[in-house]
Image 1 (cartoon, rainbow, N blue to C red):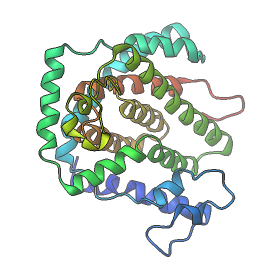
Image 2 (image 1 turned 90 degrees about the vertical axis):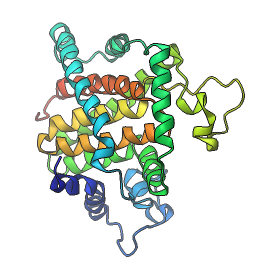
Image 3 (image 1 turned 180 degrees about the horizontal axis):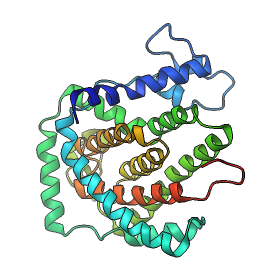
Image 4 (image 1 turned 60 degrees about the horizontal axis):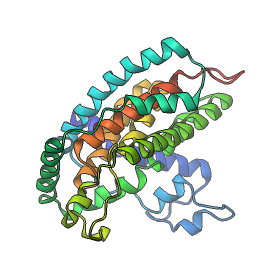
Length: 292
């Protein structure tokens, strides 16, 4: 990834935010507007309001996220091959319940104990390199990587689509994020792999882990699943932006390892789930009258 591309994606969220602000008539007189000032009449603040009140800091360097990015890319190839099997049997018909159960079955068993211990050591070593700027970036990515970033990207895409297709894509993205979350939580509850900071509470003293605590469970990563689902679906709609989406996903998952929420195998398993979910919604038959 060259320097020009890095500049493009690192400020992509800010650019999208500016466009969204123009659409919604938000004021740009300050760099950070209180959420309450932008949500009059709304039941709850949306993704635009949340990020407007908490602008992105400088994020991680390409070199930091490169290793996990390669692992994410490898999972996409695996997911595409698996999804081809689903598509051959089911076509583009939606069957969310059956598909959800099928995806859960595709997630590999957690790695052997020795492997997970080695991964924990990696996280412990990474924790020693934390900086104030890194913690700030990781915190922002953890908070907004759950959905806000992807909703802003989706909004940006829909501005250039026919209204009916934009409405379908909005529903698909929301459904994909929800399904990715549900599958990871289902698998995590079965596999019961404690998060790194549960195994070593010194990694995150702010989490206040009690003696004998088992969860939260981290395999597979929910952040990784949501990111991969969004990248696959949004990238299918706007291939020319796919590299930007992948770069942001790499930032998000790296932040989760950086702050000891996950080990690398949690990330790859979550990415596999998300890639499959993204393929599913990208392949879904459009609603009647919608242009694909």
